[in-house]
Length: 150
Image 1 (tube, rainbow, N blue to C red):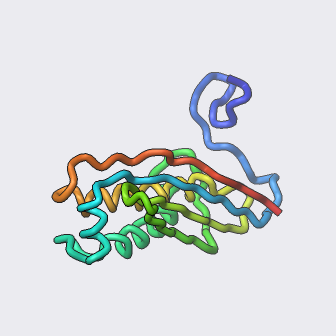
Image 2: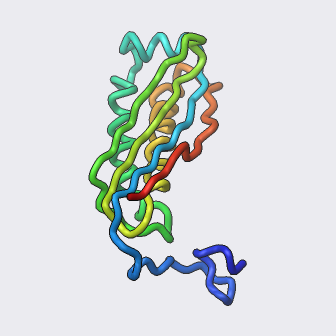
């Protein structure tokens, strides 16, 4: 257990002390996908969903979620992020949407949790907005694809 920074010597959860770490420019990217039917994808592209523009709403939800990550995940440090992108790619196979996020910050700790949260909430928003059309949607493959600090 000693290798886990969020666990103290007694095995209890703790927030990591980053007070002695230097402030650095940090960036994290994440990706995930939502599998859906062609009918659902067509409705999204034509703007024919009952709840409105799906991808615009999902992008805003992902951005908002990244900013609130510390409120959602108990041991995350609150960060004042400086940049968030949430993007979507519809594959030629027309069976899924790839969701990517990029988050930047100048801080003492990384932003991978914020990037993961942005992708996850964007995917959940698509699911919520399209569940009346498609009960078989599946969210998968949510992962960090890169993280850097300078």
